[in-house]
Image 1 (cartoon, rainbow, N blue to C red):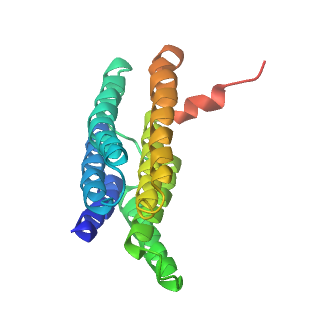
Image 2: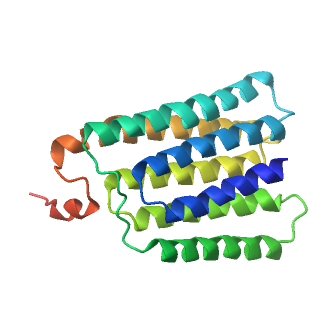
Length: 210
C-alpha cells in the first residue's frame, strides 16, 4: 500500500510539470500532503504516539490545508493571474521530469545497500530535483515558493525512510516546514504585492544596490 501511495505521489510530479494554472499547483501541493499523511500513518508504526501525532497533524493540517489556503489568499491579495507562464513548453517539462525520474531509478539500482529503501529514495530525489527544475522554469515569484515547498516534500519523504530509526530527523523536517513557511509565505510573499506591481521574476533584475 505504501508503494502505491508513493507511486501516486510520483505521478503528481508529472501532472504538475504539464499544468498551467496556479490553482492546479496549489491543489497538487494539497494532494501531496494527503498522500504523505497516509504514508506516515502506514510507515512510522514504531515511533512514539506523540511524534506520530505531531507528524500526522503537520501533514494534514499544515501541508494539506493551511499552506494551500494561504497560497490561494496570496494569489487573490496580489491579483496574480491564473496562468503560471513557464519558460519552457509543457511537453519539454514532461520530458525533463521523466528524465529526472529515470535517472533517479538508475541511481537507486546502482546503489548496493540492503538498508536503502529504493522506492523512498527514488521518490525523494525525484521530488527534490523536480522542485529545483520547477523553480528554474517558472516566471512568477510565488511559483518559486511552491517549488521550494515541493523540495520540502522531497526532504520529508527521504526522512520517512529512516523515521522509525531516527524520529528526531522527521521532527527536524517538520520544524523546517514551519520555519520556511512562516518566513517565506508570511513575510516575503505577503509583502511582494506592495513592492512589485508585476509578480514576475524578471522584475528582480531591476533591483539595484545604491
